[in-house]
Length: 420
Image 1: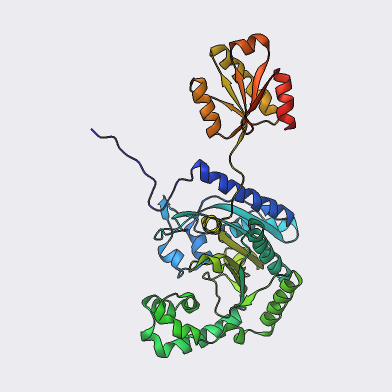
Image 2 (image 1 turned 90 degrees about the vertical axis):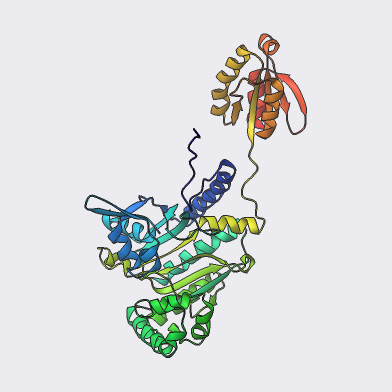
């Protein structure tokens, strides 16, 4: 009888130790930069109520209509979170974070889930990092969120980027533009792609996101939303652009840039890199002043962005950007015999307490096999211990990079490792 072979779910992958090291490097960088910007980390459950996601994303978005993992337990309906803006806002409302005073500057790193067709850089379980600033309508908040986003990629070394910028206005401006866009598209409705025809009545702005070849002539000749902004929206957009100039952040205005979720208003932005070919998007976001009220809070302005971790890792690989140093361990204790093995095990806590990373063989192998394992672990030093060394109280410390060695007491070895 053959053994059962288990595999990961379709579109979900294991992140193995060699890859985890790269993830940890990026996560440390994001945490460090967030601290400099005075953003605070927030962590929410991976499951949320279905109604929250529907309200947050909009019933007619692709995510809600066909890409969420949903299930029920009793009378409760849940989804695995497909994004984190709505959950963060839910946490803001539920936990009365407005009572902390001032705007809440929050960031996150975590897994998301979408039941879409897996492709390079987008699995069914994927990971995002992002920022949400809740409670400020000032254009300074927009500029700071964008500055943080751009700064992350600069720090990593992805510097050949373009910031695309637009305003989709407030609900009044948006309503006027949607009407103009539909009037523009209607005479050629039959020539639009099937997906754009489906979006026409209930979500026409998403047609501007279309990559279908037959839609492009009508998108290129479409009216631009900035011509339909009211005075308040124009003023906000002007301030955002001025603050970006103050920060030394260049941008390119894209009048057809829209966001796919219903809660966005005013500023919309996206960071792309021409070095990455057709799949050039790195991060995107915008202002969403309607969402807090939509999910039960008081009217509250907010702005944020999200970026894919897998996409970032792919970009680093394609651009040849190293992520962290090569894995090393400071000391590997090589033991000969059971007494030496007990001694080595007893010394590991002392080494680690002193700040020295240390390990030893777990399999009772020969000295040759242990030295080979030390090389595989990229050990900087080996401490070689046998019966003679235990009797003399002096042990061989070998520098694995320079291939030299000496005999020292354990105290002397500890001092050398700490100071190296």
